[in-house]
Image (cartoon, rainbow, N blue to C red; front, side, top):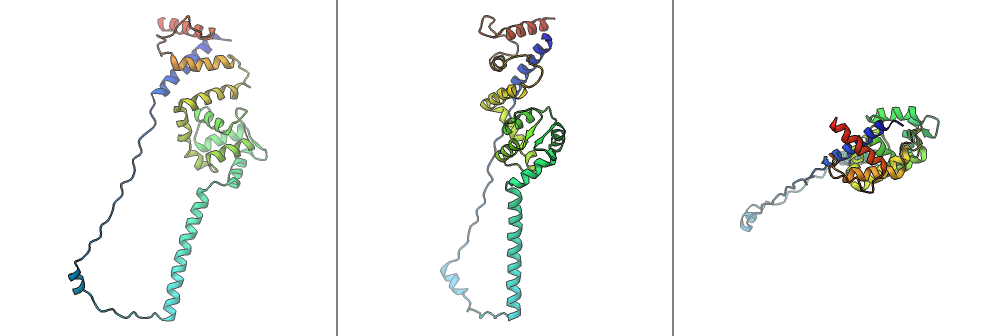
Length: 248
């Protein structure tokens, strides 16, 4: 294979990892201030002086009574009905999730490349965006560019997404998973298995994991790289190539 091309790819991975470490996407979320009211009481003598004799309430006519009851009933029903509709829309629905899947799968039980292209367009994400890799990881997809019905239902249920809008609102959460070192390592390892069906098989899994360890421990200028260390030959060649490139 063309060694320079792959070594250049390793350089990009190394630079991307250090860039991610510098990102700080978290922010403190303050709690809303709560206002409290105060009740003003009057003195006993003042209250006694201001006591008025009770007035006899007028009994509403039968028509007025029925109208008032009906009005209260209608108001309560409208309030209950709007709350019920809002709750149903917010709650996850397996049926709605299934219908959402077939918008992209058509008559098949798998979303293929064409459906995936439309899916990415609807959620506003490019297919090569790293968040699509994180989504595939959450769905535990086995083949690149494909989501099976089982993978879709299991993954979207865990994310509680059954509509395009809900998934759009979840994208920031998916991106934030890359900021956690444990999740990043899991996603990185998943990426190797996810892409292994590709015809381009440049490195094995051990080398792939060594690249991650290299990116975590070696400075961008490679100043702390030990040539006599237990790094694979691939990374020795990369360091040699990178230093020659910097000098030229």
